[in-house]
Length: 227
Image (cartoon, rainbow, N blue to C red; front, side, top):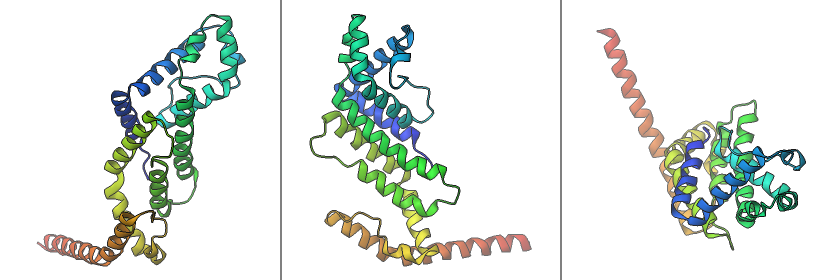
């Protein structure tokens, strides 16, 4: 399963454009990171080094900086107070920072598990997709910017992967009969149950039509080679 750096990046940009609190958080983290980087002997005193950017995967960068801020928050308060720069760390919404940390940790866990395994992972793609979508569902007492971020994540991930996921359901069922049960598909509401029922009822018809199309294509190639 290809990783979705553009989907995460697009979702975050859309969130910042839509929700002022998200844009303010990004600015505050950027300002804090820049000051720490340019100052003498601050970075070395932090429990975790505070870095901004530098990663090819947006969720990795977002997790590392949110994790570093959370781990170093109290130390930063003391160090920046001494430099009359307490406003830099105070500007970071700590509650939202924790939400970002937990969400991006979950994204990283899923994709790192797929990337590190030395065996084919096609059988894990469907479950991984649904696990991500489950983590992107809104939760109780979430902040408005986090709700918006998750909404955009669901939108961009679906736009990028939904057609492939449907095809993998069909291929997986063809290759491994145990997939016919589709146990990894959520059954949280009526729409989920209906989706699973429709998917299972369409599998045989779709595979037959696809096999017919392949047969026709092979016959065409055979006719051209004989000419």
